[in-house]
Image 1 (spheres, rainbow, N blue to C red):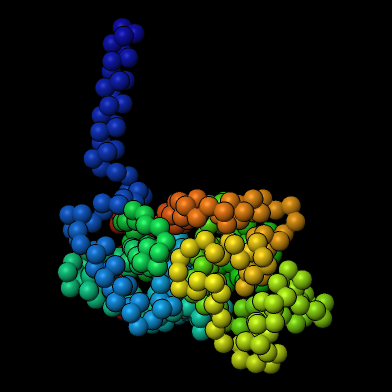
Image 2: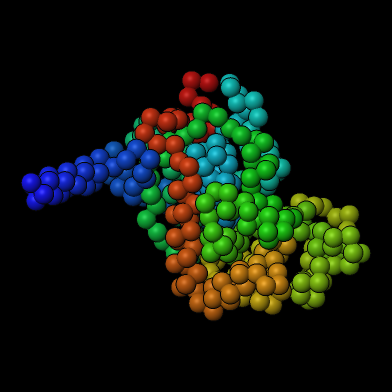
Length: 333
């Protein structure tokens, strides 16, 4: 009787494994999600990003940031793309971390249009953001990874959530760590994903507090390299335009590499939250920064994994949400 029971339970376990393999759970994303319904989606997205890069060297960093700012607010659901209209009374686009700085929406619309021409009503805007981020990084010299797919699009936006959940360039390392932890990301994810500042630009307003009167001291941030400080003070004079752009990585501004981390070692992190990763005494982030600065492949491997981890934050799947026809608005609005 005992052995019969064992055989019975063994058979049940086998059936369960087979069923799980054939019919993955509703909440599970998969690299092959569109293999039967839109098998060329990755190619369409990659070609569109490549085309956009020919006229806008910033677009790769901008698209990567869009995915990041989407995922940190109620998960990777494309909510950042929604304009005000219909039931959307407040857009995430105008939340403080995004207003007048988040960009790339026209490229997302162009990608969506190309995807819709090929596979109408199939691919979500949330998945397009995830694919565009991977293309942006790999086309700029960074790592490639298998993007997990199957997200659906939200029918709501959360401006208040965008104001509180997206990490700000003015925060302490402890606060930033808490925001990452709140969405299930650890310290390695925090350091690796910060490495996306190896390309792109930042406006003066996001770091000018470091240049003249840091934390009310009347002096610049002491963790800023003095030569670099002088350059930044020239680019961003007191009472100058807060929107002037500066390279996040002064060495290789449009290339995805590990020089972001080697810059931190010589106090050339642009944002307060960049330099804090290396200059916060006793922080567990210091050894990770050192590792990535000395080993680009370790950074690339960690970054790819952390992008997958971030892409897994609370996706809508199955029958949740919808597949938007136009990324800017909820269907039927």
